[in-house]
Every structure is written in C-alpha cells, then in structure tokens.
Length: 324
Ligand SMILES: Cc1cc2nc3c(=O)[nH]c(=O)nc-3n(C[C@H](O)[C@H](O)[C@H](O)COP(=O)(O)OP(=O)(O)OC[C@H]3O[C@@H](n4cnc5c(N)ncnc54)[C@H](O)[C@@H]3O)c2cc1C
Image (cartoon, rainbow, N blue to C red; front, side, top):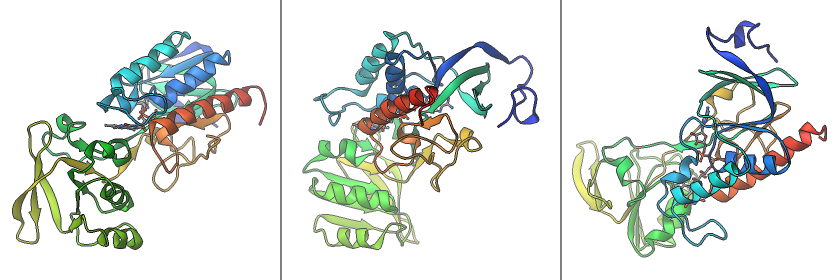
C-alpha cells in the first residue's frame, strides 16, 4: 500500500490533480471486457469511471467479420463495438480518454494515475487486453482481416478448403496449424528456426497430417501487397534462398503482449505476463479484479472477454458490499 503524493513511489508530478469524486468502480480498458463490466456495474446501481486510452471497442474493431459470438450471425467488429458502447452510454457511462499509467493501492481506495491526474475508486477492474506480436513487415496492418489473421479460432472458418500458412514455432502456432488442417486443403507451417519450442506431441500430430507441410529455417520476408493477401516471399536455409509461396491466408502466431506492464507492482502476474486471476477474476490485490484477455486463461475471445466483464463487475459489487 502506498500514499498518493506523499510517498516517493506515487508522487504526482507537477500540475496533476486528483479528482474529488470517488467512484464505486474504476475500469481500465474500454474493450469488450471493460465495457461489459461497466454494463453490469451500472445495472447494479454503481458509479463507474471507465478509462480508455484509444477509441472504445478494443481489438475486435479490427475484425471485418465476427461470426462466433453467440446470437450474432455475422457482424463487423466496428459495428459490434458500437452497439456495446451505445448500450453502456445509455446507462450513463462515458469513457474518459486517458492512459492509466499506474495504480496505487491505498487500501480502501485505488488511485488511478494518468498524465492528466488521478482518479480514486473503491474497487478496480483491469481490462487492458493484450495485443498480437507482429512480424513488422510492410503491409501487415493493411492486410489484417484481408487474408492475414492472428487467430485461427476467429478466422479459420473463412479459409475452408483453401491454402493457408501458419507462421511461428510455439504451442500456439502448432495448435493453430492443427486446427486449420481440419478445415483447409493445405497448411504450411513456417518457422524461422530448425527446432520448435512447442510440444513434441503436437508436432508429431502435425507431421502425421497429409495436408501439412513444415518449412523450417525459413523466414517470411515480404507479404504480397495487394488486398487480399495472395502470397508471401520466403527466405530459407543458410544461403537464404528466396522463393514465393502462393496463399489464400496467413496466420501469424508468434505470441502476444499482455497490456499489464503498468500493473506489475499492483497485482501478481503469471510467467507470460498475464494477470494471475482465475474464473472469479480476483487478483492478488484485494478489491482489484482482472477481466478479458489481460488475465491468465486458455481462450482469448469475445465470448470469454464479455463473460469475464460480467463476472468481474459482479465480484467487485460483492467486494463493495463486504461479501467475500
Ligand atoms: C483482428 C482480430 C480479429 C478478431 N476476431 C475475433 C472474432 O472473430 N471472434 C472473437 O471471439 N474474438 C476475436 N478477436 C479477439 C477479441 O477481439 C478479443 O479476445 C477481445 O477484444 C478481448 O477483449 P478485452 O476487452 O479483454 O481486450 P481488448 O479488446 O484488447 O481491449 C482492451 C482495451 O484496453 C485499452 N487499454 C489498454 N491499456 C490501457 C491503459 N493503461 N489505460 C487505458 N486504456 C488501456 C486498450 O486501448 C483497449 O481498447 C479478434 C482479435 C483481433 C485482433
């Protein structure tokens, strides 16, 4: 526990002010998890402060078609996020456009610090998501959702009977390749090293699939620029032989970066840097909850993020009522 403005740890640099109003529940992150938490908290009659550093909606706004959210046959991600935002706005929650840089646990209150100042709340929900690690190749952003994807569970079905590649060498890449090999005509697994970090049993299963080809010591050095993606340029072996691989889809599975760096002194993180919290969304810090892609979990999807938002808000309300 530390004390805003008094101890050196949470001294607020000149000009930043702490707001007088104290909210029941503070939420950091206005993606599907944070917005759903706001929905549940407001419907339970709590005052809500929602901090979002970018446009509310989160990662799903990058999806051209969401087809795996129960009850929604097909909707683009921007439209889905707009519906959720509107639902929350109708309950009186207007996201505040700030990046929360740190949180001080003052015991009874949690103090959210941003470049603009401080905001106190009685309970806090961290819903800061995660982002996919990128290859950082020209055209990658423009091609996302147009033949290039970071999630086979989300987009694999769009490539049924097509020719796709998965880039990566860990368990995520192997699992995505296996998943796609059940759907697609041909799957290339492209890995820059000659050994895989992923589990041997997954690799063996892949090797047994007739429609899977594994390319090791092989790098993707360029993406075909025109939308949708039509192929990639590869460099393979010590002599870096170049070749072109025609593809209908490319799945990049080289890891994720959780949005938790700012909170590592507040709550316990797991080995991957995600907030250590189970299905009840409770963290190691009393009164602080974690929802969505930023917490330890086996599946990072819309349905699990919104589920977490509901659980975390309900748990935060119980905490405020003194129910453990
Ligand atoms: C291209 C793409 C397509 C996808 N397609 C699908 C799909 O079809 N189906 C599906 O189920 N899932 C899909 N997903 C996954 C889905 O979008 C995520 O699982 C979901 O958005 C996670 O929600 P979240 O609220 O936990 O995190 P996010 O959506 O990542 O939202 C977190 C929010 O927190 C904000 N934030 C972070 N740090 C701070 C801070 N310090 N201060 C203030 N704000 C902060 C961020 O700006 C962001 O808006 C897709 C993802 C991508 C990238």
